Every structure is written in structure tokens, then in C-alpha cells.
Length: 336
Image 1 (spheres, rainbow, N blue to C red):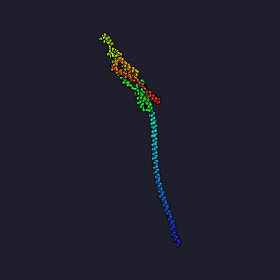
Image 2: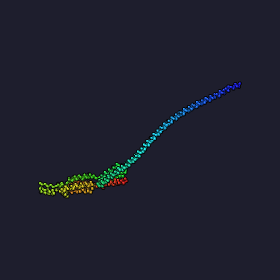
Image 3: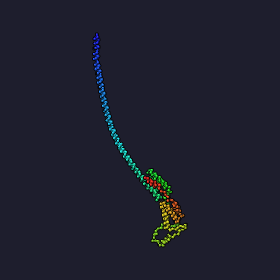
Image 4: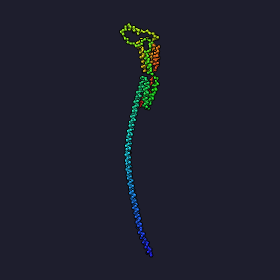
């Protein structure tokens, strides 16, 4: 009975032992399948990684090429910029040199123009001084100084301020000098000269014309000629003044000519501002009128009054110089 009961157990043991290899084989197969799938997946992944890596390497190479191209372009641009900067620097240096040259030339021209203007002003001042010293012409000196001041005003340079101030001082001094109407006085003397022939002599002689040449006429007898000479030399006239001087006609002519010469001499003295000669000539004319002419005649009376007024004129004044202007000019020349 015991043998019978053990035989199924013994029979089932070999069955279990046979199932184990199958399971192991199944597990091994699964493991191999899993390994194969893992290997295949890994291979796919590796391939994808290689592809991605190749793509990225390709993109990276492209970017490197682009970067190199950009770097090369940047280098070219920098080189062009450097060349442009170098040209600009060269042009700046040239421009600065030209500017310095122009400034130097301008200074030289300005100094030359100032020197030229100063020489002209010096000539004007010397002319004004000569007009005052030699001719006593105050008006001409004033005009000369005004012209010099106008020229300095146009230059508008501060270094000429002292010179302009000195010119203004001399102008004020010259303008304060009493003015003389020289032209008016000269016209008054000419009017007296024109009226000389209208002034009657004190002796009231009939003929006061210039002596003429005596023409010999064949139809005039010697007796008639002698009678004519006697009647011309010896004349009887009544005069109201005892001191009146009787003059023959030829001497009356020369007397009037002497008056004319005296008045013309007085006019010359007026122009040269010779006070002594001016009054001496007018006094001589007045003395001649009082001595030889009819002082009751209205024309003679008016002439004597006019001569007296002319004699009272002060034609020679003590004129100031332009020493301040000349001194300022010399000081400027000394400092420059």
C-alpha cells in the first residue's frame, strides 16, 4: 500500500523538474527579447544622436563660417575706418597748418594795413601842423584832424585810443580859436577898389583921367598947342577947404592907382594874416582919402567908415599847435 501511494508523488516530481527549464527558457527568451529591443532602441537612439550631432555640427560649422565671414567683414570695415580716420587726421593736420598760416598772414596784413593807415595819418597831421605854422589856416588844420580821426574810427582798433583822444583835444582847442571871415573881408576890400573912380577929389578938378600920349596933328598950329598946354597946367578952382591940395589930372590918376595898390596890398596882407601890414595899408588909404578927396561926399564918407571897420579886424591870432596829436603819434610809433 505504501508503494502505491508514493508513485504519484514520484511521478509528479519529474513533471516539476521538466517545467523549470521551460520557464527559464521563457525567461531567457524574454530577457533576450528585452535585450534585443533595448539594443535596437539604443541603436536607434545612437543613430538619432549621431544625426542630431551631425546636424548640429553642420549648423555649428555654418555658424562658424558665418562668424568668420562676419569677422572678416568686420576686419575690412575696421581697416577702412582706420584708413578714413588716418585721412581725416591728415586733413586735420593740414587744415590746422593752413589755419595757422592764414592767421599769420592775416596778422601780417593787419599790421601792414595799420602801418599804412598810420603813415597816412602821420602825413595828414604834419600837413595840418604846416598849415597852422606857415599859413595860419585854422580851417584847413581842423579839416585835416577830422579826416585823421575818421580814418582811425573806421579802423576801430583799441591801440589807437590814445591817439584819437589827443586828436580830439587838439580839435577842441582849434575850434575855440576866434574865426575870421577872410573871404568876406576880401570881398569888402574888392568893393572899395571898384568904387575908387567914383570918389571925388577935394579940388574937384574937371579931368582926372590917365595921361594919354600927345599926338601931333598936322592941322594944329603951334600957338594953339601952347595955349592948350597952358590951360591944362594952370587951372583956377574954388575949394571949400583951405588944406585941400590941388592936383593936375595926371597926378590924380596916379593917386587913384596908388589907392588901388594899397587896397590890394591890404588884401594880400589879409590872406597872409599880416596884421601890421594890413593895418598900415588901410591907414595909408584913409590918410589919402582925408588929404586929397572930398570928405563931404557920401561915397568918401562910407569908404572911410568901411576902412575903419576893416582896420579893427583881428586877422592874426596866436594859433595853438597840434602838439598833443604829434606826441601821441610818436609814442605809438615808439611802442610798436
